[in-house]
Length: 110
Length: 397
Image (cartoon, rainbow over all chains, first blue to last red; front, side, top):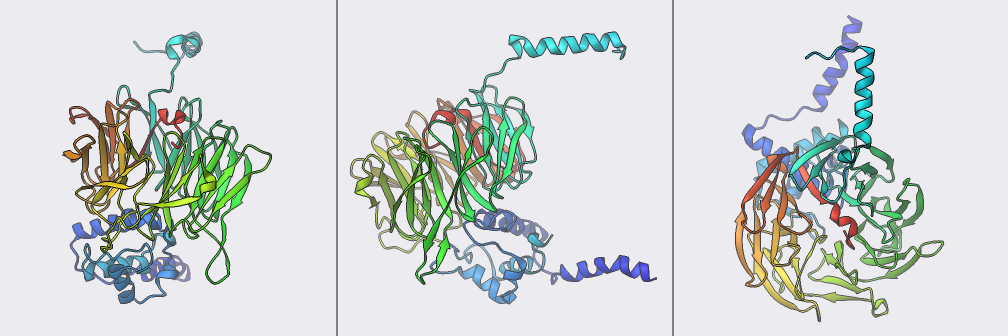
């Protein structure tokens, strides 16, 4: 029993730490957003998000924001920097999905 | 006929193979070779541009997002600059990685010196330039990009726009500091010349084919920074200031690239930042002589080697087409759809073909540049940069 628990524990922890609130975005669009995140955000932040001309997007750094705050930052950009506003390409719901990925399913943690 | 592994047949086979290796038929030159960076898999496809085919694949090159490639002066070796700071030397004939080092945490590209002896790498993290012996990739010099920020703190800047220049020099720009450096490698130690206040956030740079003009694009303001290497005492001058006419920029989803910029006649064709325009500047006084409206924000603005056409690729989300501009009439003569997410274009040495990578279509499409018809298609996983060996003999490439 003890051994079983120990074997399961990482799985359970893994499940918790990567749990993302259910999204009502269509799977096809989710796939597009994933491509956008790693390829297009990746053109400045690196394909693995470890940074480039833009800073690394580590989970720790992303969790300094609330989900809403991070989504707002994505939609509005950061004036005076190279971070553009993505509001013309993403809905609020889609920006929240990307924020979720960065905060809970970050490739730098995998 | 079944070939049995008898000692005799094995020996004969070995003799046959040995014979092949030394026969003139098996010799291979590199003048029509090239590489395609496959960013998702960290591999290079070795290609033959005479027959539009893939010859080999080299794996194990690390994180190749935004990777670039330079060639040795004998055009046998490719130096691959990875995003993760990896620097690899690849033998195009054998497909082997002959040397590979991790030289920084995050890098953006490099250059090879005029004499072919040195490889320079531009690093983001830690910000600076490192120089290596091109034979064995042994470290020759480490030049940190140090600057003092507005608060008086010493910082290291990300380095961009690193190119080779005549006189065994390299030139590069500091993104965070707004500075340009020349490093002269003729003496025992690197000799640095610094230019400050060149403009806000240079994001990339180019050197023209003659090696005289170094131009850095500015992200933080409209305009570009020009350094005339024949007259470095004159310092850096700002060109095309206010090309945006004070209008608000569009959001810039991807930084333009200046390498492979276009010269046609006496004019330079350049991507505008945050605008759906290609800019044309007179090379005598660097005044703005034209703007060509295009269908998106330009990323690469490249001249066909005969300078009759300019080919333009675009930033997300308008990146599924390329446009071709006739330099004489200054009109768009074609809008082509080579696939989804076009990342790069490379002309064959004399320009009869152009190879175009479509990242999300997992293919490279080859066009005849005169008929504008597709002539070949190569499957490739998430292809980005395409580099042909004729770059080995061109300044700045």
